[in-house]
Image: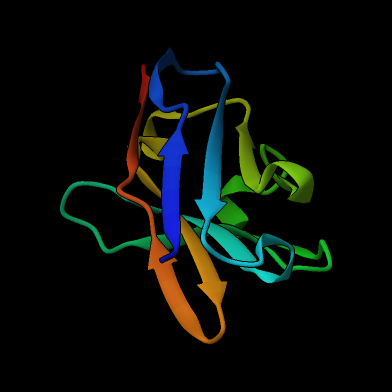
Amino acid sequence: QVQVVESGGGLVQAGGSLRLSCVVSGSLFSMNAMGWYRQAPGKQRELVATITSGGGTNYADSVKGRFTISRDNAKRTVYLQMNSLKPEDTAVYYCHSRWLSKDYWGQGTQVTASS
């Protein structure tokens, strides 16, 4: 059974930084495509960043230059470093893992950037 568990959310002032972590168990992590998504109140869930098994990355235009996604296969963990946070980054952030054509989601972690 694949489990996806996020951590690292919190409250930060605008301009501050946070790092989210996501640990995946129950799959061959190094082969998983991983991603971070977010959902703000009243809005649809949107892609933030993705990273392939080979380390290729992709970012939403709204976070380019501020957020960095990375992975440590030995620790079965994917990270999202978020710098220069803005109030509009406030949302629940979800970790996504794709393994053998199936999608797995974490429970989400709240990120709040106050103005």
